[in-house]
Amino acid sequence: MNSVHDALITLDRAHVWHPYTQQATAPLPVPIASAHGAWLTGVDGSEYLDLIASWWVAIHGHAHPVIAEAIGKQAHAMAQIIFAGLTHEPAVRLAEELVKRLPAGLTRIFYSDDGSTAVEVAMKMALHYWRNMGQVRGRFLVFEHGYHGDTVGAMSASRSSGLFEGYGSLLFGVDTVPFPATWVGDPDVVEKESHALGALDRYLESHGSDCAAMLIEPLIQGAGGMRICRPEFLRALVARLRGAGVLLIADEVMTGFGRCGTLFACEKAGIEPDFICLSKGLTGGFLPMAVTACQERIYAAFLGETFDRALAHGHSFTANALGCAAALASLGLFEREDTLARVAAIETVHRARLAGLGDRILYPRTMGAVAAFELALPDRRYGSSFTPRLIRFFLDRGMIIRPLGAVLYLMPPYCITPEALHRGWDGIEAAVAAFCE
Ligand SMILES: Cc1ncc(COP(=O)(O)O)c(C=O)c1O
Image (cartoon, rainbow, N blue to C red; front, side):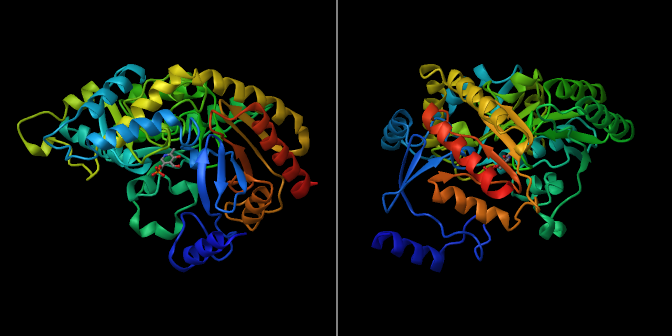
């Protein structure tokens, strides 16, 4: 340890409150001086392999020079201007480029600040759409164990994650149906799917006409435990929602921008939502920014002579020009670096290494750059005493991995080399041996 390291820790302890951290028991935060590619460098010179892309944002890796340069260039021209009444090239061009790549029909781009606000905006749009259409539809349907963010609407939609028990009086009610999570060799997947679809059918029979929208994380539930469902299940679900006229909001804050192997999970699932929520990888992980995109017919319902038909939403930093420049550069990298081929290569390693763990682990699953499984721990709850111990275990081996309860997962930046990825899996093997054998 050096003196800068120690001074930063002391100051951090004195003044800083970290997210999703029990400060009394968590390992001391690690002061990081720089981050490049898949590696972080501590102020004391120690190196850490970022195997979770820093909460899933650093898709191309840290400090990608192309994105850094685009931000720098934009910063000299214009950083932020009011986005009501004014517009600018980076925002307009980004909207154009996103619309070209998004699932069919998503033609309108609304900018906000983070994944949670992207979800809030979609929920407000759905509710207001129905009001503008002269219908009262006030209910929202979500999957059990879904997670959509930390603002009030997003937390309400995430109630069954179990994370927000302490804030109950702040939240509104949502309806839930089961999510048929599956894994390699799951013998019950068809039964679980028909159980979930049966629950959906019963729900739509009684509430199909007063439900505004269903909000889903397509294919992978992230913070709920990296739970994966099959594309065919989602297609059957969407057909039922369409039959009842219920709108579909795809929260691709985590799955968007290549995580599942295609640019968007909806593409892999073969579904076309009415809204899509994007953030995290949008700016290549450089800046906080989000998008809620919707179908043209939704947008059209907000047009009229009076303001009460218009969307009452906007943030100070809407369409931040630096964020837009970063996002344009990040999108360009997908072609330039053949990013989806990189994701496919990561998936191949994930599959082989997960198979190598055999029956020492529970519920193995992989999709695109995401691999997950459960450790057979005596206490598998989120926030159990194993969490800080596991985090420490990986830190001591120079790795950033944060379990979700007993779920260990890897979601590396796409630039990770095969050697580094194998090193991550070696760390996982060591953890399985240390904690479960
Ligand atoms: C699926 C999903 N939706 C929404 C959010 C919230 O995003 P943010 O943390 O940027 O508010 C997250 C964050 O992990 C997420 O995974």
